[in-house]
Length: 472
Image (cartoon, rainbow, N blue to C red):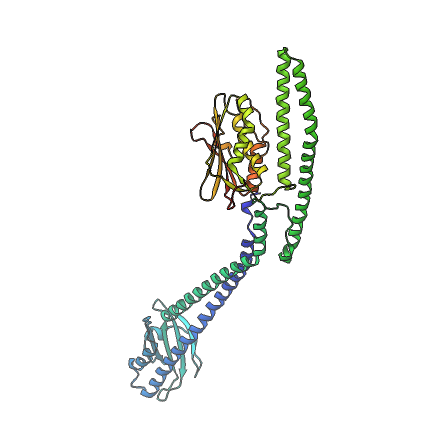
């Protein structure tokens, strides 16, 4: 299953919090729309009623001979507005008498009750209108008069639209505020989990203890079981890795003595086989194999010691990288001479002082120099350069060998990873892994690049300079 398809806890919580608010907003929006319609209709109907009463009062006061269009002028002024609604009125009785708009009088409507006002919707001249009508007994008329006043719906609809827009705006603001506040609340609520994640990610940083228990005192109740399971898993991983590490260290130590004995016997056999070229060649290959195996065992011991952080791993000593490089070159000189490789140290007179463990840092430089010598052709030169700037001390080892392809440079730091080469020079696959592990332990950086000459490989070890003076 694609992990990207699984929503995060933040997304789930946000959705579960905002969706109900959105549903409530829709419900309140629908209810608000009905309320707006009711309020607007009631308000406009009251204005329509007031205008109708005004017409009735004017008709009553004028008598039978003066019922003309002027009776509606004051009423129409009551209804006039910026929406330019159109109004019409009519006065009629059962005998066919009528004044005002003939179409309105002819419009079939339910008979209004006497003395009260009734409202009905209708279609007049192609327009939707609201009609207020009443029946009154007026002095001077033999029959009761039916008075109707119709108004178009522009003002009503426009007023409802404006109020609904305001309602929608405020609901949108409310929903946005709810989403933002919910998201902030979720972030704050998940902060302990975020801190735990950062702590676990920090276990990969140099000097961190990868399998230390997570403190559950600051873990929320809902995550206690998860963190406890993680702590249990870490304890089991620590025990398993510690067992493998102890076995590796013990096996390496146990094999050192037998290998030393094998190497000694091979040397004795070589002395006795003087003049037997085939046998000497075979014994030489066996000696080289034992030597490589001894070196691998030594590297395994160093790796186990560094991983376990046991023993005298004092990382606070003041170390001169230039002096360490000179010591390594002196030790590697016989090997370089046997392979017809020149070695050169280019370091400043001033000490390159860093803080760390001299034995471990010497192991890093030894691995880099050994690799450079091993993969350099006859007649080549291996140059070890010491450099420093305001904050960093660097040892760079350059060779003239085949180098490492750029796409492989990140992988060679993996344990037991080896590049397939055509030179037939095997390695253990541990040297660069040990160098990277020790550099990480010291908070430093080890990197690979092209040599300055354009031919071969440059390996750089960079460490922060110490503020203390170099040892004498």
